[in-house]
Amino acid sequence: MPDSNNRPDVAELWRSWLTETERQWNAFFNDVTGTDSFGRLLGGYMETYGTIHRLVTRSMERSLSTFNVPTRSDIVDLSERLSNVEERLGSIEFSLRALAEAVGHPTQPAAVTQLRPRRTRRPPRQPSQAQ
Amino acid sequence: MTTVYNPDTRALSEILQTLFERNLDRARRGMSVLLSRDPAAVGATLRDVVYARGTLRLYRYRPLTDEVYRIPVVLVMTLVSKPYILDLSPGHSLVEFLLREGFDVFMVDWGIPRPEDKRLGLEYYVLESLPRNIEEVQKVTGEREVSLFGYCMGGLFALMCSGVFHDAPVANIVCAATPVDFDGMGLFRRWSDRRWLDVDRLVDRLGNIPADLILRSFEMLRPVERWFSYVRLADNLWNDLWVRDFRLFYQWNHDQMPFPGEAYRQMIKELMWENKLMKGTLTIGGRRVDTRAITCPLLHIMAEHDHIAPYAATRPLTTIVGSQDKEDIVLRGGHVSLVAGRNAGFRLWPELSQWLGVRSV
Image (cartoon, rainbow over all chains, first blue to last red; front, side, top):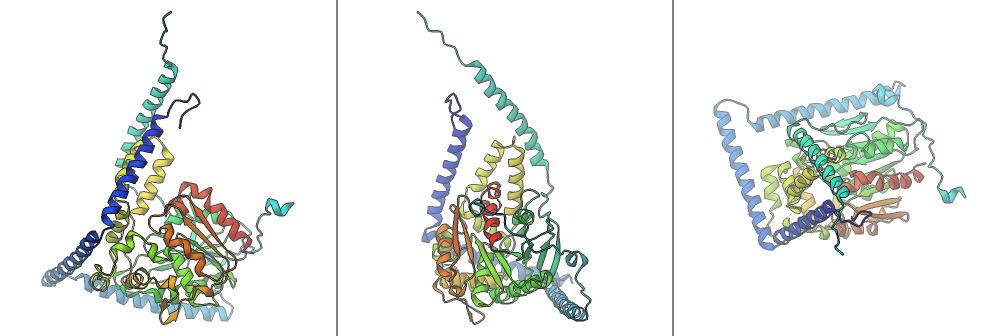
């Protein structure tokens, strides 16, 4: 933006140029990546990615099993079992809480239960309402 | 008579002095940015976990006012990015702003999917989890109704949930940057065309879609943005606030999460390929999502230059709901700056607070 003496701001010109150049490059790449041939290329890439991922996973599992080390799927299995334990604990906790609430002993963490702000807030009056 | 050329030396020296000072600052801060490896502190607003299941956490932020609006606000996050975008840093946080405005704020954080979460589909998020979170909010606050604020895909979950459960205790819905017409998804739609994307094979092989693939697909929408952002960083190194924001957003952008496999499969097939939400034919777990049955007040916020959920994809949202009290707001900016940019504090947040405030008593 020119200053009060109408001198052009060089930094502003440079930033406008930068923004415009970026826009043009993005537009150019978007034209390229928006074509069917790029779509096919991307599909091929995803296919290869999936294949390599599977191959690496399999060979890794074989190698780790050879050295008697837990594989990723062993750990995932373990994690799944832990999740099930968590779920069970969660539902037991939920039942206990419901039971406690039923007999008048809320069991929520103190920080949450102690938050009892008054729920009576009204929006500030707008200028048109004030008139 | 000879004309004497008298250059404006004072102005020139001022410019040179400013340039010199800025370059000194650039050098000093440049070293600091390059050498700093500590992640920026994010999501600092005080909160408590109200409910947890698997990776899911329902947080309640500690109110900052003695008196709050009657209806609590539940922020529903997207599956593709970390929720701290709504609570970036003290003084630059939508959550903090809403608390200061007197709202009782909750957040549904889906967490980072574990490998076994590859089986989680829309049924889990829309039919089980979100309603269960709403129940927990009801219990904690003692209020029957809640307002849902959905960002990006979180907005889709809010719409889907309210479209399935017509008696859901939802007083208001706010959708920000939420795509509904997937024919308008531009490059994402082209890249996921069924002619070249075998989504079944991909999900069956990978399980969850890796965070790296998600990040690269976002970057491909604006392939040179990252490189130009480094040039801008060099240009603005003298500006503390700019550098701080850059580091926050850079960290968030690169802090992607894997996408749960089954949900990805459904999103691609049902929404990207068939555009079923827009056509009104979407079913989840055998239950029809009837967005026309949504009658609560709805605020729809869109970004004019959103390259992730383009304007064409978000624009028709209010046309597919049955609400009488509905409003579209189109703001300048992009997908992220819409809710978390420096200007969001002056533009979106006050409007949001005003809209919600009068409907939360």
